[in-house]
Length: 173
Image (cartoon, rainbow, N blue to C red; front, side, top):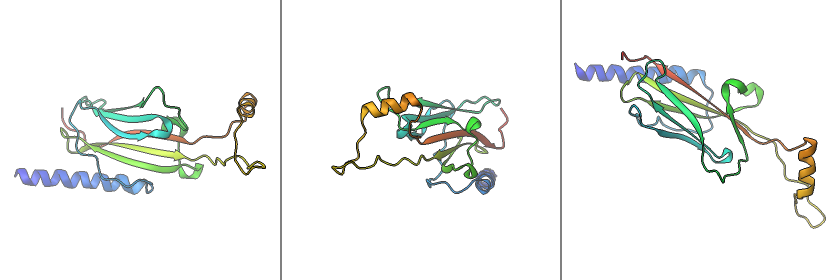
């Protein structure tokens, strides 16, 4: 009887994954599900070096908010070359030029029918190096860059957006 229950739970998780995957575009990064995580264990989900940020999460055991995730800075000395924004505010979509970067599925050990799903989108910036000078080198001059900053004419930088949802059937507490 126990093996049938395990098979049903596994089939339910596979069904959840198929339904969620059908609605998502194909991500740039292909990955398997993260190993099941225990309640209260903080785990890293994704590091975005360009944004000097790491996305981490943990299952809470609280039925009202079963999973929480947060973005933390990787180092106080890191200089970001990209921004990480809230997906609810940015509303990323392929129609707006966003690229579906990563899909991270985190199953729970305590509740096999439920998983946290983190979606990461990337909006590239078309940044070209400066034109070559008479010596054939691309140069960036501090004085010129400071003037561009004052004039509000800085080059765009890449932007990442992350969202989290809990999918599947909630467990009885």
